[in-house]
Image 1 (cartoon, rainbow, N blue to C red):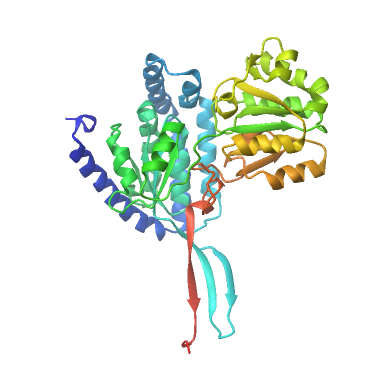
Image 2 (cartoon, rainbow, N blue to C red):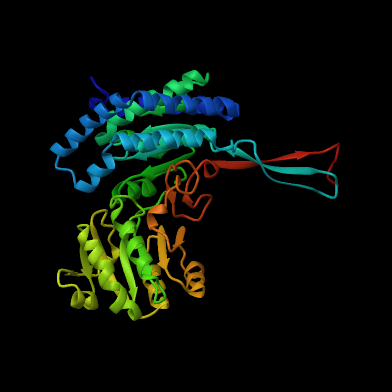
Length: 427
């Protein structure tokens, strides 16, 4: 009987064993040397590069099954691996390998009047559970970031990307073997049964320290609602681009086009465009025409509808929708203050951008909008750990505790205090 056909108790037993093994792996990684971790990731990157044909074949199997199910174009784009995307995975793992090792780094230190020397030092979180859907690259990114930060990782990929993820994990395990680290440091859940997710959300008998969901709103909402351990996540990426009255036209067109259409299925893709009323006559039409030329559907308010004959009327629901597709909602606003009010009302606090040549407007936008990532005159598709110089990201967090924005190696650590004395006692 396969795991997928097993009863819930059997799934629970298997997952409990994975949790216990992960804890053992975490103990080994916590004391691994920087060179061991660097070697593990360098060899893993080389293995992914060397075995790309096998990975592409596994991905073709996943793609064929997904297409047969009638999966959406945006979903298929997230699932697809190409030579170029594998190049990106290899480069990301190599970059993470060469990052400074965060474990044991001194964040701060000071002396007390009584002679005690206090250090705040980075330490791994322990065991990270990553639950993701269609993106095979998450397998490598999450695995590499966790290994680098000294954390064991349990990967539960979606059924649609199972074969792709398995092929990538085999390469990651080559790296662990080469570095003399236990394979329990990185485990792929060997079943697509959803009961496995439920077991992870319970914490696997206290063996999972943090859960990171990567996927659609339904998955993330389930994790946030049911998890009994801390969660790093964002529910959705309802991303805004605001065209200020001082915006340079060329920047407004190119940045908006890239923010929406570079990859429509990523969480940093723009979903709503706000245009200041003073530049409607000069900026709105060129921006919209550029989007339409790339196949983007426009849903606009009354002013947009009057200028763009092919636009569809935007409903209240449009301002709340993460399309993950070639669709954008467009609204004309009376002022910067109105744009900020709209964003604060509808935003998921993920990423927002302002196109402006007025420093005062930019500062107001940055100061008054409470989102994890804010950009000035740059595409929202830079909302990515790799673009931040993190090598990759395990996800983007929009909460305000511990980690916010792209979660890289530093965000996957906590800290402890080391206090050195010379016989001091407290009076």
